[in-house]
Image 1 (cartoon, rainbow, N blue to C red):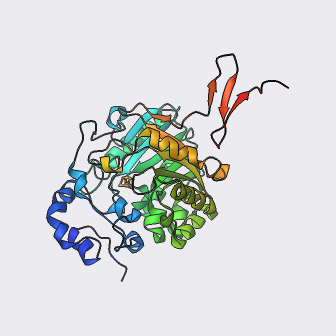
Image 2 (spheres, rainbow, N blue to C red):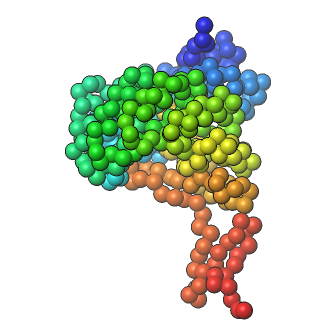
Image 3 (cartoon, rainbow, N blue to C red):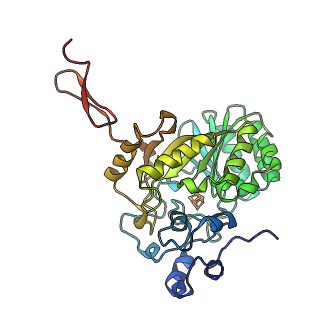
Length: 350
Ligand code: SF4
């Protein structure tokens, strides 16, 4: 019998991942925020390491009860840009379609932690889904539909195929992108039926894989990603820069290399959002800039993610890596190389 997802403190204790003595402190956390650790992720955790970077992402901590004044239930402003239920239309040429608010795991730093989980916004009803597709069909400027949530790959292949068929008939939609953690947290779900479902339309399919530590790229995860790539899916990455998980140049470099080895092009490295009870994961932007600068020169250009911040309030993403170029005050520019040395452009003198 397949192992079950760990979704209670008791189950985590039986798996050796949470001492029973911690239950009293953690019960208010799990009463407020969803809990799920998939068997694949539970197997990756080293219970003997109190600083295990996988555990830190998924095992509840009492610090989640500390909500800071600047933290918000909807840190990236989804609701402010939602014209109909399930759609977020923040940028002109693309929309999010949030068909489901369930995930196979619940990340302790989740930016939508007030919306996902058993007590969250649920799955779109048939009528709401109709309205969402009607909105997409009516807005001819929508070139890309991004299925997110929640994790769209928790949907059955039958439901995914239905979504793809519905999108197939909307001529102006050219790209369908899925945001998912499934290839790393439940790789067996990436099977022939799921891949066949993605082929139910002739739209170009992208999968943006969310992973934050190189240990998540297990042989099983890499095999799942290979199945997607061989199924014609283009793979890109999304990671969150997290204190105690990947705030180290060596770890970030290993993560980005692991992506590229698995045919996943590094895309976004997110500065953590101001989600409630997540301050123990946040670094400063200056610390993030130093980490990203350390990747330059250390790893191949193929492995460089774009460091971004979702501006609170729904104002979209901004690239926040430190600039390597500035005016020299005399009409030219000063350019910093990967060693930190500054050069004039154009070069002075002969
Ligand atoms: S998989 Fe994404 S939406 Fe789900 S809990 Fe993690 S960060 Fe949140």
